[in-house]
Image (tube, rainbow, N blue to C red):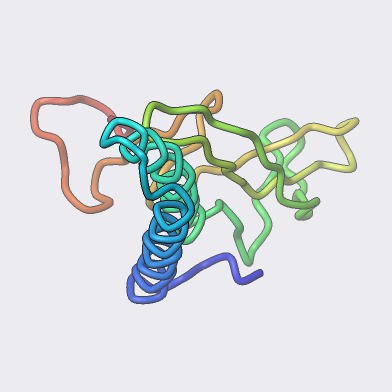
Length: 147
């Protein structure tokens, strides 16, 4: 799986998912022709949550997962920390559930010191994503690099 995607690639992936959802909704309605508006709306909501979860994963993971060509240095010993793998976690949101992933580095010299580096667009901090200043617009009046 390619980690970084262009804006056009991310948009195309979202539009494909939305088209699949609409087609599935048409199929559902074909098999439930007597469904009430409320039943149709409930099915649309269920399918929308799945699509939005996928869209959020594409939007976030497709921009930056924290992978660095030059390995980061260990904050304890200063040695290079080799890339170990991508680690994932589930985020359950109002609009959908999604799986996020971040690059994971481990220092072999420091008994497993680990690092999840922040990306250029977002920073992973305790399983939450925070907008970074300078990555698409500063937030005026806020101090520090992470807003």
